[in-house]
Amino acid sequence: MGLVVYLDTVLIPLSFFLTVGYHGYLWHNFKNKPSRTTFGINALKRRAWFLDLKDGNDKKSMLVVQSLRNTLMATILTASISILVVISLATLINNAYTAAHLFSSPLFGSQSTKIFALKYGSIAVFSSLSFVFGSMAIAFLIDANFLINSNSEEFSLYNNEHRQTIFEKGFVLALVSNRLLCISFPLLLWMLGPVPVWLSSLALVWGLYQLDFAAKVIPNCCNKQT
Picture 1 (cartoon, helix red, strand yellow):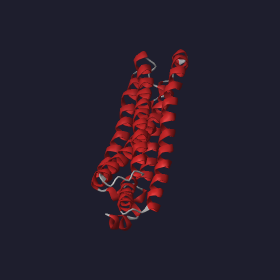
Picture 2 (picture 1 turned 90 degrees about the vertical axis):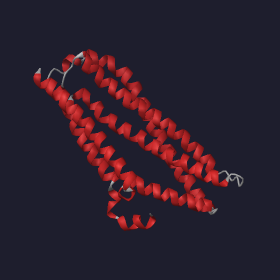
Picture 3 (picture 1 turned 180 degrees about the vertical axis):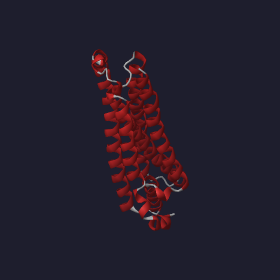
Picture 4 (picture 1 turned 30 degrees about the vertical axis):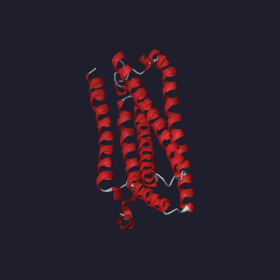
């Protein structure tokens, strides 16, 4: 029993703090050294797009709208997957609780009622939050799409500042939704024990690091844009 408690109470918090700590480190770099992160470089490019929009470059405006559409479809996919995970959990939880006695090995962790509720409750919370943030991102991106195509000279300065804010909020919320869904995937493996959660969290952080900091090999290009 001691080994069971040890695995659940040590590996699960370590996995959680590993992923949260990584995203805290990512956010710190994004705010202070945006040229080191992929999302920061994309934000710099989006600001350049808006400068072209102010100059009345119709070709650049069309490129922004097309890129916005791609991000919108990806966000809709993320929100759809999140809500499907929540619905699947509602179907799975009863059968999993009935078959919990089959996972009696210490490597599968504790099978107590409280731990069982924590397992599926945490997955449901992260997936639900991913759906909520994804829905908010979709709303902001749709508004940004409308504002980009509006040409009101009376409130041109206000429109430029406002639509850029809406545009950036949509992308940030889409990123948050995507990362919450990514964090929920290792938690899905908690039903197989805390060891797979720890290993999958290590793999997740390594993969995200390669994705988020891949642009650090081209700092000169980014510094020119800043």
